[in-house]
Length: 118
Image 1 (tube, rainbow, N blue to C red):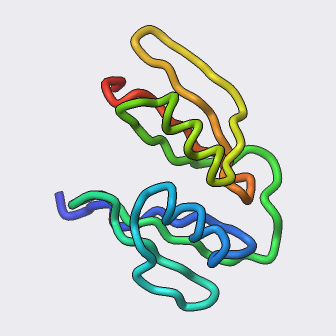
Image 2: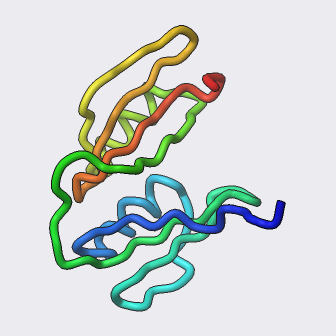
């Protein structure tokens, strides 16, 4: 197939401020800052980069798309992300899967699951 995912872009009010959270959360640097659009380095070879794009309107309602992450130690990662400015919204489970729903500092929803979860 000729199509591959290169970047996931999140709409936000302040891309540089939100980049501070996501660079710390993912342990990656900013690769480009165009004022209205900030790109972060890919967190792993072949993984999509994260883009942060300024938009004039605030987020309203539930995200139509959200980011899902996996961690070796979900509890420790959730605590670390809260210290960085994220908010824990809830914990959920399904057979063989447990995850925590969170919001970044601008209210964009994302999830953290245990790495062995599929």
